[in-house]
Length: 218
Image (cartoon, rainbow, N blue to C red; front, top):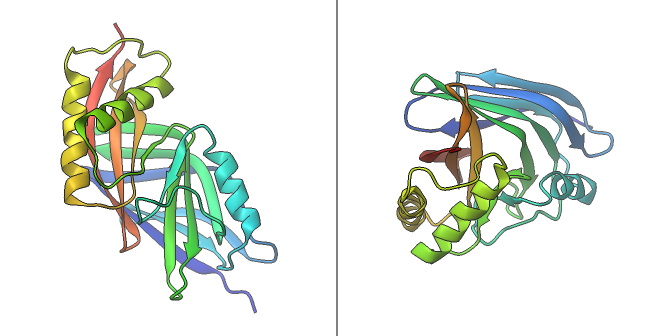
């Protein structure tokens, strides 16, 4: 018997007041019910779907984030082998009265050998952090790779911002050695800037995150 569940994933960012998610497309294991995406309690994305993992959904996820990356709770996990479902769409986060937007953000759920459910985040514009011992040089490379996805941001502005962002990443990953990834978001306050957001997956079906730097095209 197949059962549709409310699968909740919560975003925790300092200053976050509202999450939005506009679905573009999804993948779910054959024969499983799917009821779409909604928002609960301002910061939780609810995906109504059945839970049965297959490689078909994992392949869809990996294709959806191709060119970027995916993250799960364990930092060494870079791509799933089986998933229950995956949803791709536009993610918006209202933080300190500014709306940050990322296109083609992917949320997915699988299951563990102990019977629990685990979550994956990903994007074709995500730079995943795949080492627990993150150096400043490694974090700097992550920042530059993430800025590379924002084609209109062609130089570092202000000067020194990349190193500042890298230091924030090092501090965050040293504090929480979990799956982490950096994604560029556009801002509703500027047509020529991006904000780099760091996501860190939690074992409590949520992600903690932080703003790590605003970059403006010259």
